[in-house]
Amino acid sequence: MNTERTVFSQLMDFIPKHQFNQCVRRYRGNYRIRKFSCFDQFLCMAFAQLTFRESLRDIVTCLRAMTPKLYHAGFRGHISKSTLADANEKRPWQMYADFAQILIANARKLYADENFGVELDNTAYALDTTTIDLCLSLFPWAQFRKHKSAVKVHTLMDLKGSIPCFIRITGGFVHEVNILDELIIEPGAFYVMDRGFTDFARLLTFTESMAWFVIRAKSNLDYTRISYRPVDKTTGLRSDQTISLKGPLTSRYYPVPLRRISYYDVDKQRKLIFLTNNFTLDALTITKLYKCRWQIELFFKWLKQHLHIKAFFGTSDNAVKTQIWTAVSVYVLIAIIKKELQLQQSLAEILQILSITLFEKVPLQQALTEILMQNKINQNYNQLSLFNL
Image 1 (spheres, rainbow, N blue to C red):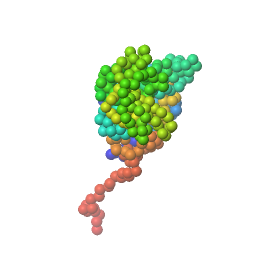
Image 2 (tube, rainbow, N blue to C red):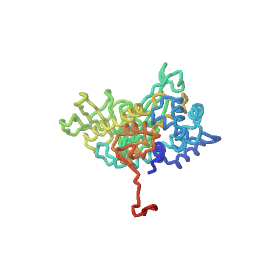
Image 3 (cartoon, rainbow, N blue to C red):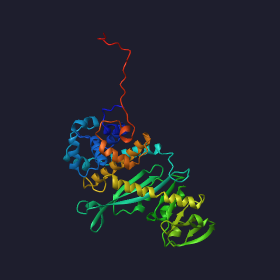
Image 4 (tube, rainbow, N blue to C red):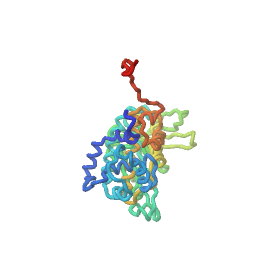
């Protein structure tokens, strides 16, 4: 590997440039653009995420300090605060969303055989929503409460590798249960959800699509027990029942039987009730599957702590979505690098290392590991000296 290249330049080698250009052409992102291309914009936003920049001025100041190295890092246009701000405000965020989906598809192939804690042949997804609070005066288009704005990031995550495979960014007023209407349900897959997604008319769609769901039950669930199965209470299980819904509306929305599993969490001293339409897996596996849903909570925590999505570089809907999608792209890119280079560090550790080595001229493998790579100087000792006496 050429040690004269910066870490940032080597990092960008993992980006499929041809497919990125296809996404840009699809939305005419570079139409009438002369000096600051969409790829330059993406590099600036990726640099901001990788180095924890706080504002547009912060991004531009740091990049200009590295002017001699920018060309070899992939930058081709002149970088200025106003140009970057205009790009975030006006250039379609959809091209970065499409490109993130390309990276996600590549990452899911790499993590297809990853073990997530449950022995399961089926694909398992976790579905959840996180809310990012905003200032109402700066983001009036995302009003959430009377005196507050917010955006919601609705995410479907493949539990193998913790790769987000479906993301919708909406205003805070959109309830998470509405996202179930936008999912393309995969037959045979498991969808693990919290009780905020309880809507029996929508859950019936999973059953009709030959997919499985696992969801926490609400405390006021009205049901009738049809049958039960014995459980080993030493494992924490309390009951495993087949039920039918009894409420006047719920019985009409979901007229087929459900499985109700009761589990007592000794660590947190609380009782958990799960509902599922799967009657073949043992009850303990169902509870373990729901426990794996915590991975999506860690993903949201990781995004908010290690990437810059809590404070935004622009106030428009387009600027906010551009920043979130580039943040997701950086997360997935780091996951790809971790797998491709077979790194043992966590994603957070890799990001911390990259944040201080981006413009160092060392091999990427060496920067991310303790392996010391040195150029070997081959000397031909059979060469006679010209001035040998």
